[in-house]
Length: 86
Length: 221
Image (cartoon, rainbow over all chains, first blue to last red; front, top):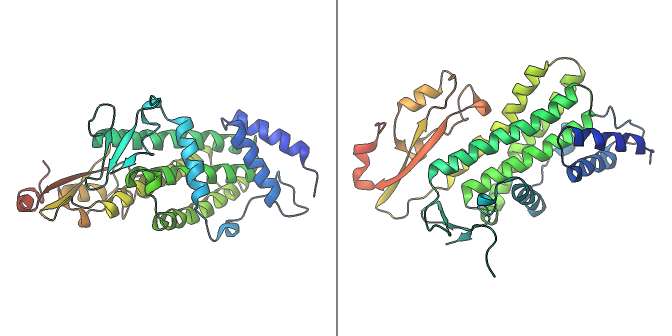
């Protein structure tokens, strides 16, 4: 694997400076490093659309959306999307 | 144990949330406000990332992935809002969201390349970004339309386009002009209009006795 440590560290800092929370910043950079083709510089790589011909939405993505909702919404509506169903 | 956060009930037959603390229904105005705030907050987050990318401070790969994460969260949350919560989402909803994301992911990759090629100004980029966030709002209305059912056979659900506080495209005023129509006939905001995912309109719904239908259809009360 190419050594992209310097890029990764710089990128995480830049994402945080852009308002991305540190966990998301790290996750995004890890995703890039995992998916960038061998020999390609992650600093200039544009992830192609056809990488995602079949977009999976699963329980994991729903859980991620739920965590983001709780983290960002005011206390009064944090539980709104986890109601008791009657 | 005391509940730390205020809880809610989703009343499936009424398609409404109820606040368990006050015992009152959550008004449609409150839901609309939540949807509006959700959209503007998403726009703000996406614009911060996009501005940083346009100024060369983050890489195209990070721009693409972080935008994908945010539009996915926005879409799932908005569909959940329309369906009565995350646990009410079905495989069909997953499919609907996935289909929307497939288009959006491709658009985001295209936009990343357009910035590299110098084809989009910062203003044009922000306009595209606002559309990505608006797509989640469109999903909310489409899901709401598809899922609302009258609570009894004697009732029927009607809907009406509510023009937003914005300059309108050529289509939306005509939809609003129709007044109350059957839910099955409503064109949700963002669908079949020139403003598409930039549409600022809303959609009102109401359950009425079937016997009163003639008094409502075509009116704007």
